[in-house]
Amino acid sequence: MAYDYEQFKKAVFSLTSIDLSAYKEKQMKRRIDTLIEKRKVDGYEKYVALLKSDKETFEEFVSYLTINVSEFYRNPEQWELLDKQIIPELISKFGKNLKIWSAACSTGDEPYSLVMALSRHIPLNQIKIKATDIDKQILEKAKTGLYNEKSIENVPDDFKKKYFTKIGPSYKISDEIKSRVEFSQHNLLKDTFPTGMHMIVCRNVLIYFTEEAKEEVFKKFNASLANKGVLFIGSTEQIINYKEIGYTRKNSFYYEKP
Image 1 (tube, rainbow, N blue to C red):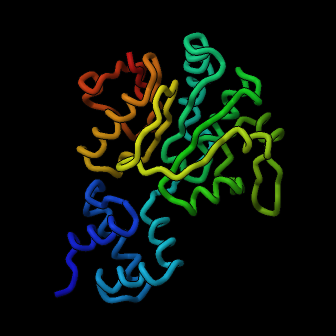
Image 2 (image 1 turned 180 degrees about the vertical axis):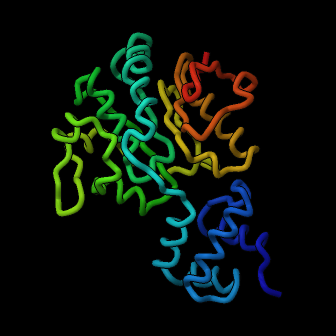
Image 3 (image 1 turned 30 degrees about the vertical axis):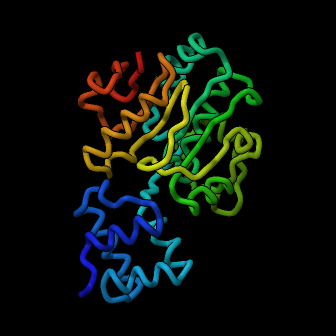
């Protein structure tokens, strides 16, 4: 009997440690079916066999599953609040050696934006961002640091001039900024979270998770934060039961661990 979607999910988990049950099924199934069609294979079972035997198909699959829509300074007004209020508050509470984690960092736009934002308040050589993502390929792209014009359109002009070099149609971020970010692979649904973080940034990723998985990750973020630490989420997200999980709300996108 051919695989059904439940069996496919189990096979994917054993191959990749990605738990498809934590994602909204209809949306995810549609994405996977498109990918199977593209590879011209018949059904889930044959596709799993291809994933096992063909490295390119496997990497394409992981990359396709992990949602990578990213840009620098996404929703600029939220970054302005970070600059004017959140960073100064964090420095007054914790000093300048801040422990910051960019979770599900995608192509690096977000952690690099954080380095630039922090550089207005802290010497560059004192900044260190921990950046993680489940997708190896995406992390390689992030380390390369090459972006299109649209990706960097919200970067403040002084940073654009100072930290980006035009190469053909693309823009390369400077080694000065790159060296302040440490990238590593991490699965939000499975791996251990770091502790004592002063700020965690995880934006526009959890919208793809089920409510249960989302709540679980928000709880883990809370445990990961130091007291008075801040979680910065995306403009399409909200933590409805934030009080029960252990946050106070600073505004729509910033939540504090009391």
